[in-house]
Amino acid sequence: MRRGPGTLYRKALTLRYLLTRDRGEVVAFLCQRPAELPRRLRLLTRLVAVTNAVRGYHTLGEMLTVAAAILDVGRCRPPVAVECGVGYGASTAKLSLAVAAAGGHLHAFDSFRGIPPNAEEHRHLDGRVTAFRPRAFRGRLRRVERLLAQWGAPQAVTLHKGWFEDTLATQAPPRVDVAVLDVDLVASTRTCLVQLLPRLAPDGVLFTQDGHLQGVVELLGSLTFWQSEVGIAPPAIPGLGRRKLLAIRPMRPNPGRGT
Ligand SMILES: C[S@@+](CC[C@H](N)C(=O)[O-])C[C@H]1O[C@@H](n2cnc3c(N)ncnc32)[C@H](O)[C@@H]1O
Image 1 (tube, rainbow, N blue to C red):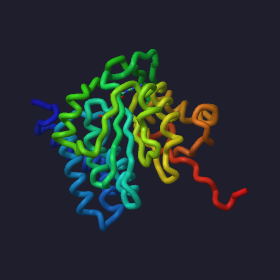
Image 2: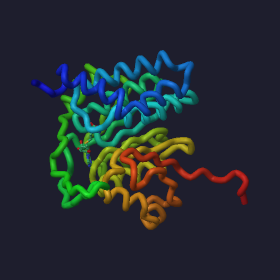
Image 3: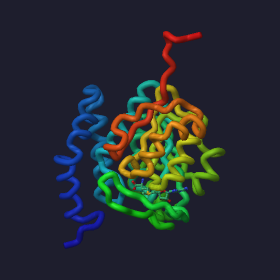
């Protein structure tokens, strides 16, 4: 039986996950704002179509959580979103649809050459050992552009090609409302956080989908990293060390404590 993207098997699997693994996020996404139910149902349908058609490295539940944050910002202003880690483009297509629905724009960054050379060894939170081989997840820029044209909202996306270490400092927008990292390496996570956290709007949120990696958890739990490299007080990160998708929000100044 054929099992890849576009097959009946794939559609059945997506349906099963919708009703089981991703059910909590699906219900939250649809019920959060009852007045937006028709719009959110339409968006969910399109995200499911992308899941069925393209190989991705995220759950639909994760994308719905991020999409809800994008739609929420869209209630006040056109959201500016940043994605680091495009892979073959499935997550980018989904985020582009969410951003387009909210009238905003997505800046998506990737080498389009896969994972950079590295000597990092990783352990999942459950103890499994893994390594991210150079060139893994190599999605070619042209193919991602075609995929966005077919499944996403290409007019709402700018693709930035290059290593994060070279592109983010000069090409990331000055204000970021929602950022999403799916970059696997600790070194890449470090670069993204240092570049993006200071740009995050006061009501913004940065998600990382790499919370299942022990090295990323250690980085996020390091006081020295936050204070010396990012230059902010360590934020509270709910679920750190337990959840894969983590939401990082900047600490808000306490209005009652002005000088
Ligand atoms: C797991 S894949 C992303 C998968 C995608 N978000 C999805 O859900 O389908 C990780 C991506 O991060 C990119 N990446 C990791 N470190 C990078 C770096 N330092 N500079 C540029 N791209 C990087 C790789 O090229 C790869 O495409």
